[in-house]
Length: 396
Image (cartoon, rainbow, N blue to C red; front, side, top):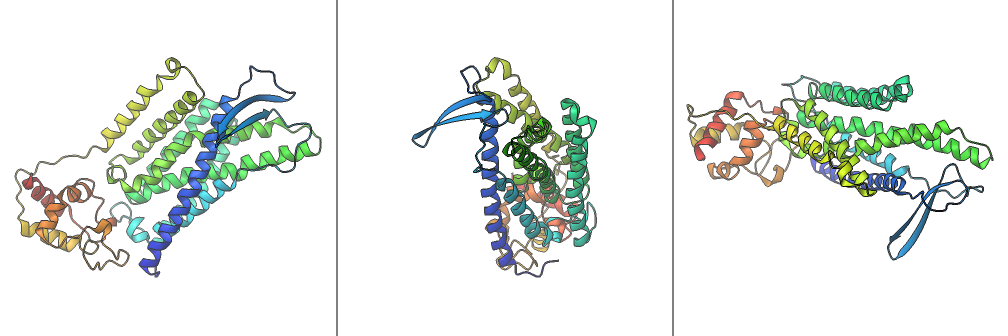
């Protein structure tokens, strides 16, 4: 699909990824700060009229006195600082990264013919349609009567994410599926800011500047979406870095793994918030073993099946022949792959000694998780994977 020079694509990937990380740090940091601030505001001290709470903070050699108004001060200053571009730039750079890494190189990173044979344009179309549909479905649920029931709403949002995970893992490659789950959640979070939180805050601000009493409903809705964003933050970060870990993206029940990640990540965020504002560990400590249980469940789901190769024997020459045929299009001094032009991680298979040196990685990536070759572009067979497994087993 891509006719752009791979060298240029790599540089675009690096620079956009850098920007995405910077924007993400800014957004997450701002979100963490304000949620923590909101929970730590003191209300047991004398407060001016209209102030809901205050906090004293020290940072960078200075002291800050922060007050939160229930509505606004009598004279609302026009020079308000809005926190929105952190979210917008995170989403924009994320979509640019999705374009460079997965759309322009769909046959390598997004499509796995063994899961579903797609053309690049079909894969890109499904990707864009699913991200848009995710937001509209989520927004519709929040605006429906379900949105007034916090517990039921949380359950429906969780079910939506797991359903999306099930769909993505049955359409795209392992890496493509997990990055899309992250993009699915991230799109919802960014759209919450763009389409709900900021517009509602703008309406409240406009009313106050006119001397009118704002509709409290705008603040309630904005707070609801902001809370959703807070608890989805840690799960979406893990989804975004998952493509570095084949044992996650290649898990047999990857969609169920996503559910455990969302539950464990959301509960971890809740525990960190409560601990940050000084809640007694005796009251919130129950969350720690629950988080551990979700983590243990995730580890069980990602545990690879170990085959018994005791009845098989593979010679050095056979192993090298398989790797030379199926892997050296990328892992060689001069790759012939149409996308990969430098051996990933500098791993080159030119001799049996090279195979022995990287035997552990070959076993993890090609035999157990079967995440390599990427998209199985060279059509490695199960018999070949078993033979490699038998050869590696003979080295132990």
